[in-house]
Length: 170
Image 1 (tube, rainbow, N blue to C red):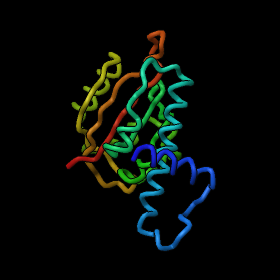
Image 2 (image 1 turned 90 degrees about the horizontal axis):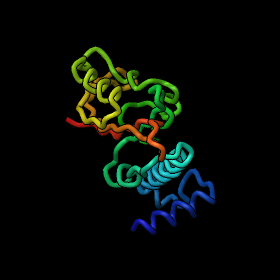
Image 3 (image 1 turned 45 degrees about the vertical axis):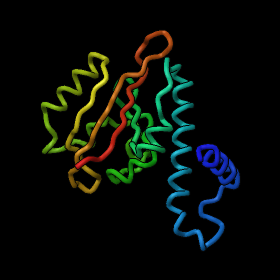
Image 4 (image 1 turned 180 degrees about the vertical axis):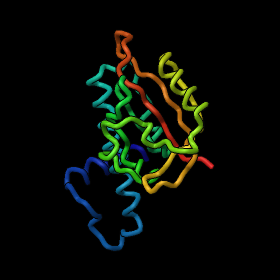
């Protein structure tokens, strides 16, 4: 199925369609848009990893296609340099609305100071972390977010990015 999805993405991307060619396929349109968005994210993330010389390749494909996670990449100053297209489904923000901002923008009154302190410590020490954090959508409603983050180093061992895999949880 992966080979089919790859081929379908390349074919339809080359046509630059914004909708499916047949009205009878309306029920599949959402999947098609999601598939195209996922593959655009994968290509963009692979390009980012090449430009920054990441020492290992992260599992973008699995995170987006299998697990349905949101991927956020920051620079070393914690400014967002990439947000996957599916972020809008979790918190209402479009990727272009969060670029250049700090992920703190998703926090609010009920966000645990203890949890954010543990995350800050892991970031400062350049260590992976995992936590459930109370975040806020664009409309102000709260949700719980499973956040798995890790530092990304280049081939020379220099810290170049942080990557976070996120998913809403109950």
